[in-house]
Length: 203
Length: 398
Image (tube, rainbow over all chains, first blue to last red):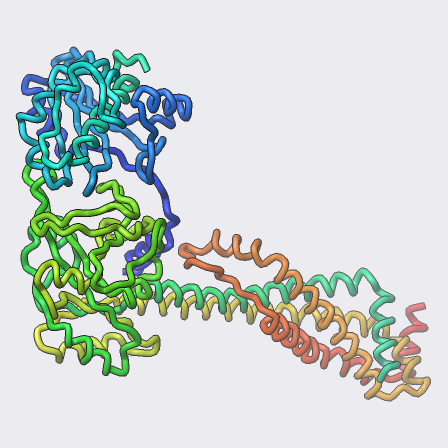
C-alpha cells in the first residue's frame, strides 16, 4: 500500500512535462487492413520537425504550406507517426495523420497515400464539427483521391483561393462553415510534411 | 565576573588550535542539529501541504454512481445516479467538515469521434470551492470561470491537446448543440484531470436537464478528524456510497511520524557527540593546567571562582560554536536540502528544510545548555584541585 501511496504522491509531485502529442491511428492493424486490403505488413516510425531539421525545416514547411504554425499545440516538437505499408518487401503506400484545429475541436486528418505521395483516401478519425456528417461523407472525401501536394501548391489555404483541381472542391456545409478551411489546411499540412517524411520526399 | 570572563577568553586563546578544533566540532554538531530540526519542521509542513493538495479526503457519491470519468465512459455514459443538491446543506452542518465541493458528472455521445463514435465526459464543478480543493491544478492559459451559470469550460491539458483548444475557442456538446467557451487550459498534472472538461455545475445541470441534482460531493475534513469514524457517520445518509482516501492520509501521517522519530534519534546522537566532545576538551584542558590552577588557588582563588572560570570557558566555546553552526546551517540550507532529497526515497514538494531565526536561536540555546551540562564535571574537577599537590605535580613534571 505504501508503494501505491508513494506513487500517487510522486505523480502529484511530478514536474510538468510538455511533450507535444502527435496523431496516431486508434487501431492501426484494423485501419491499415481497411486502407490496403492486400498489404502484408507495415512499419511505424516517428519523426518531428525539431529532430529532422529544426527551425530551418519549419520555415520550409511553413513556406510550402503558405501559413505559420500557431497556437499551443501546433509546435515544432510535435511527433508525427508515419505508417509505411508493404506488400511483401515492396512499399505500397503510407498512412499519415495530423491534428488540425477546427471551430469546435480537433480534426484528425489522415491521408492514405501511394508510395509516390498521391492521395488515395481521406479519413477523419476525429472531427468535432456541426457539419461533421457532411465532411465525413464519401461524396466529399472522394474528391481528394488522386491529388498530391503539387495540386495544393497552387491553392492558398489562408484566403481559400487558387487555381487547379483543388479549387473545384466546394464546401459541402452551409453558411460557409470555417471547418472546411480547417480541413483544407490540415490536408495541405499533411501533404507538405509527407514531402519531407516520405521516401520520395524533396523537402 | 568580568575578570573571570576575560581570563576564560584568554585561556582559550592560549591554545588556539585546540580551541578552534573544539569550536569546529561544536559548530558541526550545531549545523546537524539545526538542519535536523529544520528538516523535522519543513518535512512535516511539506507533507501536510501534499495532503492538502490531494484535495478532499472523502468523495460522497450517489449509491452505484461511477465516480471516475474513465468508468463512466467505459459504461457508455450510463449508470449515473444522482443525489439532491440539498445534501450540501446537511453536510455543511457536520463539525468534521472543513470544506465541501459539489460535482456533477455527465456524458455525451460524440458520433464524429472514430468510426463508431465515443463518449465525452464533462465534470460540473463549483468554481468557488473546487480549484481550492485541487490546489495542484494550475492554469497554463486563462483563468477559472467565476459565473456558476456561464456556458464556459476549463480543460485539462490532454483534453485541450486532443481538441486543439485554446482560451477563447469553443467546444460543442454533441447532441445538445450547446457551445462552451474555453476560458482556461490547465497544466499537465499527471492525473485524470488532464483529460477532463470542467464546466460550472449549475450550467451543466441546465444543459443536461439535471437541475437540483449532483453526482458527488468532495469532502475535506479538519486535520484532526478521524476519517474512518466520519465515514461511518456518512453512511447514515440515505443512498450514498463513500469513496475514501483515508488510507492515503494515514500513510502520510505515518511517514511524518517515522521521519520525526528518525530525526529525533539522530538529534540525540548529535547532542551526545557534542557533549562528550566538549567534556573531553575541557577536561584535557583542566588536566594540562593542573599546576596553573594550583597556583591560582594558592594565590587566593576560591573553588567557586575556579569552577566558574572553567564553566565560562565551556560556555564561550559552545556559544561561539553554536553561532557559527547556525550560520553554517542557514547558509548551506540549499546544499543540505539537496543531500536529504538525494537520500530520501520520496520527498514532498516545497522546501523540506525550513530554518528560521527562532529555530536557530533555540538550537544555539540548546548547545549552550549542553555546554553548561558537559562543563560541570571538568569544572568540578578543577575546583577540587589542591594547590600543594598541583604545584608538586607540576614540579615533578619539570
